[in-house]
Length: 349
Length: 290
Image (cartoon, rainbow over all chains, first blue to last red; front, side, top):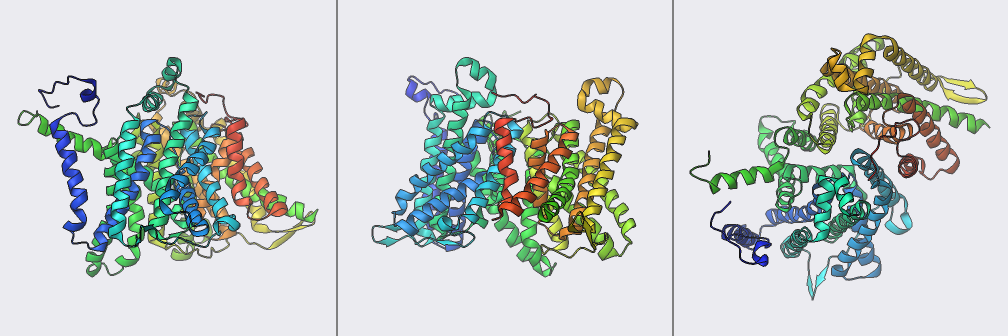
């Protein structure tokens, strides 16, 4: 903690960034995000990676609202993203709805679907909710692959690229700004959510739901709200993916994706927005890193090529387990430890 | 009528195999309160080990089964020691995530070693068609039912009569009391995981005998969840009866309604059961509802 900070107004005390150092770090981060495409010389691959991270951040923040802040386990993110993606894709491809309108519509629809699946599951606790959301994942994907009249079944749904004014957003560079603007908006909305009574109710449910009920928090209603809000952001992620990738297939939304997002928030840090960002960055960069590692080791292990996808999947599982055993509070905790070390430096013992 | 008998027998086969895998799942839950999301992968590994033993090493199938069981026991012990024990006392979400991570890891390892193409499994149980009550069914399915029943009787005997079995029931009932009686809870956990891995391996071998071995076997294992929810997470007879019901349900829906609905009907049943009677048919009513 920085000493010598005396707040003299509620506004200053409740601000999202309360000290000059926090504001400086946030400012540096924003500058980095704004400058990044130019720093890498507008090369498509790094910008593509950052776009992936940005999209994953939105989904991870959404999931963290449910899992990290409200304490409910969900294995259905893949399916909810599919709902958002297919909704946005169908709206644009079949009905010509402008892309910027499809994102909120898809998000709202996904929130409704999430609430629907939440109703039977949220009367139960912990493990049962995980199983119920697993069932939701399977059911939704089955519906997507079998409801051919609407979703085209197992065929890919092609989405025309979005237009801003007269400019086609079909390069990574142009999408970068949209994605990171939305990611910033999501982070801001979520940070503000947890300054309101709704957010505090979520946290109360996570910490001691019986006490929350006693205090007058309608636990079932707020759990449903958390589920809906989380599904809203997850659906928005799916819609963004639909517009960014240009095609929507069910294979991108299987249970592996659900596990991936859970891994992101566990590794990044439950119950924290920056944790969601760290986790999203880590899990996005890990496969890229492993691919490069595999490629450079090709000289030593010629059979490495076929192993690389399995190596990625194995590393996901291994990384989840290792983080759970060694650092259960995730990368956020490591970052906090670093900050705290320097806060008291040189007397950090 | 023929179709009905056919579907019943098919459903019974799948159901008994699912019940066998669910047995291990319930065992782990009863003993250590952990939901094992990797049960499907245990099943798959059992099938692949038998495949490796019979096809790749060339052992006779009896010896192959022994090897598979030994590997399953080893797997259970290793998972309990290195994944579960460090997480004792952590919130339940951590343990669930650890088993989910484990399932990812095991799937990837299996694909790395054996590739992701399904392989033909040598039918160590002959699949000669047998006519029973007017319906033709492969003998391997009848053998699967018989073997599953025998395994369940063996386990029932183990839990009722043997020392280790009674110790496991004690730990499942009340860990502290069991510890004060001198029962080593760590050993019981290891036993629970090993037996679960063994039952899953046998189930995997039986399934692979019918549909071949491949990474899709772990998806078969995912259907353990509707079974244990229907039967009750902490009830062994519930697992058996739930397995039979789910197996029959899928067979009848597939046969009479079709349209691929049988793939998802068990999950719809799961959601309905959770709404109506969350502790299942035989489970204890200890689910907190807030």
